[in-house]
Length: 75
Image (tube, rainbow, N blue to C red; front, side, top):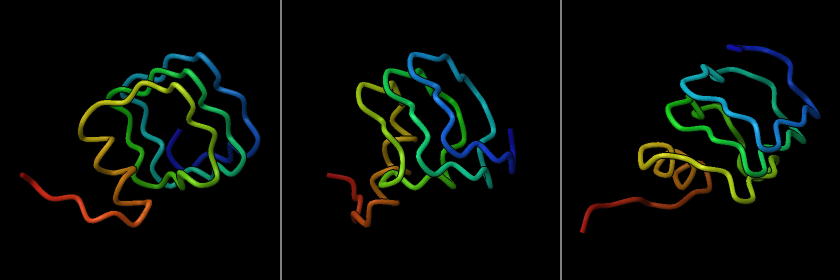
């Protein structure tokens, strides 16, 4: 799905394991309850997507936190 135009797509409760979403256009996409583990979320704007109850892995959590402007550091 690299560079796909997914505007407004409803992926609620979907399983999207190891999907390349880099460069995808995703405004107003619903990922509520979706299992996204292993997918490339580097181009995702977390402010423009519904993520409620989505399942992500630790690396993705760092990507999302960074995209939100947080400074992620080790203990």
